[in-house]
Image 1: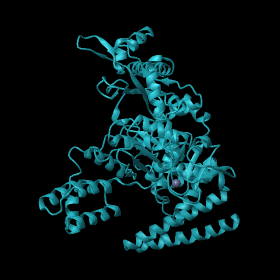
Image 2: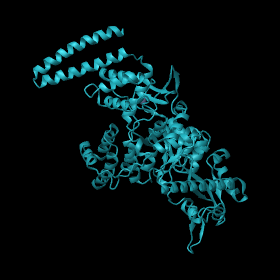
Image 3: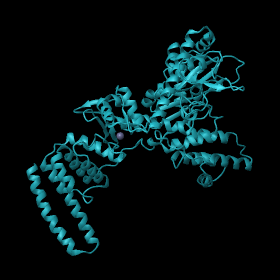
Image 4: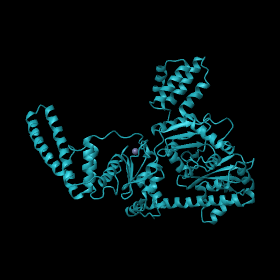
Length: 594
Ligand SMILES: [Zn+2]
């Protein structure tokens, strides 16, 4: 793997403006030395989310999450570590150096970059062809008739593929790319006689980009009636995996993060029309169903995915898989009931259409309720075999929902409609196999990570012992010299398990506990909290001693209780004397401190 050198990683960390990075997701206000705002990771009304611009850290005192700018981008954009670093390096103009690279991996990376450049150049060629060539006149007319303005078309890089058989083949080779490379990115294909020719001809071209705006492939819409398929996509290549991509996500991601919901439509022009009408959280799938991979890609950014798709015809299995992935990530999938024969692009092109569309989105129903409704609607309840079939069909849908109140509601609805006991319906749900072969899509390094990362609830109140250990550990950061002493003396008898791990971390990273954060989320949350607290709490040798003695008292009390349980009266008496001495010391220290 291409390793980012520690030096350039440091340069990225230096260069980022964490306040700016986070401000894209929540409004931050200055409050003393820090910035605060509503937590983008859990639902709250009063701000408990803090950003320390100096330390370049964030921490939520409500739900306990924390990290640096890289971690934030990983979480919010659903990226892997390296990708998050690359994105920030790009944004803040840091050149990344890589080291110890396996030469073959290096060659693959360079080859990939070359192919990315090829796709960019071809996209630019198609775009200029749309605006400049007489041949594309009809395409321009068609797009204008659909109400799509030049600004939106240019923003999405829409283009036109010439009618000639070899434009890309010839120009690509002239630009130094081999036929194999052109083939590899799906731009040319081989004919029956073994001759290569352009895959896309006489088509309106929609570049399909990833989240970072890199073109990975194209969707092409036919402009002549004799062209066979109305839509042709890039063939599946190493680059282009249709089931993982969402058209328009590069343009929509900011709006999606802000609205914490995505609106998923079917067509490229739907996305363009919606963005043009101000519904900027719209993206498109390339098919009629949303896939589990696409849901996973959205997780971390959204709490809700609203489908304005042809849900009647969408593959049931695909939808169920998507639903299970969504349920595992605490996301809701809802369905918009689009009026028959009208697509989103047509709707928003009409007067007041954007408002109508928004109202439909707001009124969307839960996907599972929608699907159960479809099954019930086409069931003849008078026939026992029909009722049995309906039960068999709805059971996996209900099973995919997990144990939720809305599932109980649906179970009751099904029971009533089919005239069965709810317990019997429930029995079928419990035994329903969650789909044959319906394993969760393998988490890719990028998307799988964000699983369960979206902390939706505040953490429980801290105990007084936890508050004390946090105060002491924070002071160990503020006064590292004295801190070392205490860190050596603290044991698992004084600290909570996480507190102990944080103490170990501080001991192993003296002076700079947050410059490289731990891999572990819980530990990172605590370390960021401690670093922030270390700036707030007035630290002194005396208050450290006092906190330590109080933890020591808790330790002795735990031991006294344990000795009592063992009926070890001798040990208990010794410990009680120890406690008496300790209490005296605590009283003396408190006098000094106050
Ligand atoms: Zn939070």
